[in-house]
Length: 122
Image: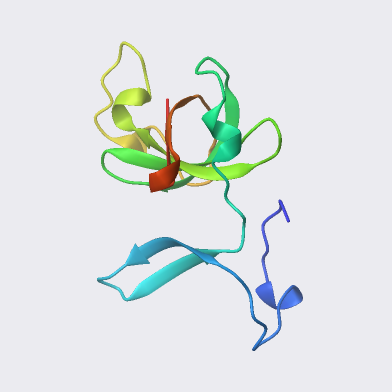
């Protein structure tokens, strides 16, 4: 599914086995966030660095944002956008003033580390 699920009970039943990936760990609060989406890195590894692709901000931290991006073939993966990659010619002090969760953005792939399951965006 590409759209947001407002009520997971529509898709799943209690006790049903599913495969998930951990997307967020908050040790202090004792919370985990999961996804059932199948993230892949292969589709991103060969993309030219000048190709803009669609993404959505999923988390914003002090020095970086996490972006869920969609490759031209439809594959989806999570990646990192450092604050020094946000703007050319302008210093970004606070990412929370530049980006918000759910915001649609255009990004370019600058590095893929498949063995670390990490994509860097600009």
